[in-house]
Image 1 (spheres, rainbow, N blue to C red):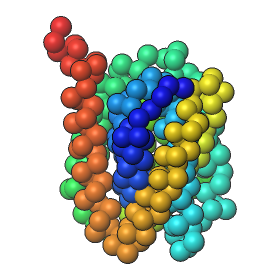
Image 2 (cartoon, rainbow, N blue to C red):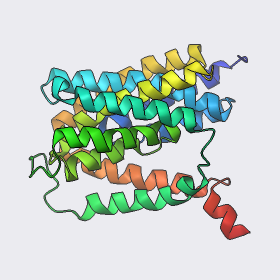
Image 3 (tube, one colour):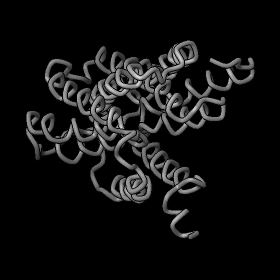
Length: 261
């Protein structure tokens, strides 16, 4: 562990608070916290591992806040959460084996498509719709796949869970957001378990950021419950477009390298 200045600690604390706030409403907290950790001097794998540790606090805080108000059926979602956890463990363990260049190249376009879906889809409100996939199949098929993605790569995981709940489980936007946090908590735990196993976690900074994540997520979740789809939908669209732009601006983005070559 290297020495970190007070200014850097404050920056990481603020990034964690704001990341937790955004993530509890629309996902995309990693868009803020991972670059902050990299700017703080952490290696890429240590930044990912530490981000999973502090992310547990944020997603856990949001889950508790939503559940306390009756927006999450914890018992019903437990099997899907377990599958999300297992998928994330597998994704994190295979992250160093499976090349991620193709995924990094197509992800910005997936996020833009997701933003357009939520922007143009009618009836995007807090009312439940027709269920297209049973809870059993949702947990068996989708939870481990998105969990695997979170462990292997991560950006946009909450947005993908939210899309799945809205389009396939038939949940209203607020209910989908609340249940997303539970499955995201499970995938964060899974990814963290794998990264901790290989020693890629900065514990002191991760715990400090975790406290700030917890507070930020609680503030964000309470705001989401007050405003519902009116605030979740526009923030989700902004997060997806912002994350896509951030990935495309990265000089190491495979698509930019391919076009330049």
